[in-house]
Amino acid sequence: MSIESAKAFVERLKTDENFGKECSEKSSPEDWVKFAKDNGYDFSKEEFEQVKSVLCDEELDSLGGGHNDGSTHTGF
Image (cartoon, rainbow, N blue to C red; front, side, top):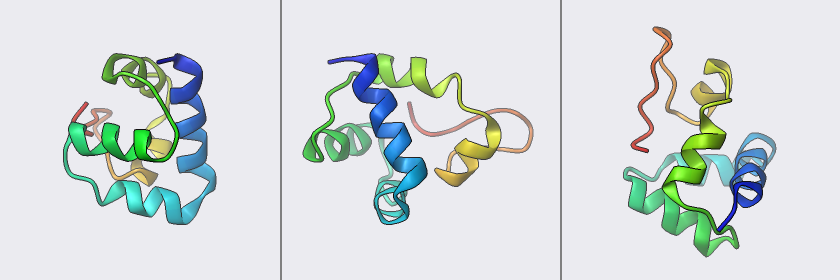
């Protein structure tokens, strides 16, 4: 598992509309991790949290997890 894999996953979410849409349909942390692993990524929830923490609200909004109050709720 690696931070690099989590970064690559997030980058693909931002650049591949279909991939991002499919991922946004997942409703639980377990589903997100399984989706990532099924698509060749290998990272822990903690590693994803580290990468996610540097995303801005606009990027999180595009993933379906951002809120205008600055908080996030992606399940991780």
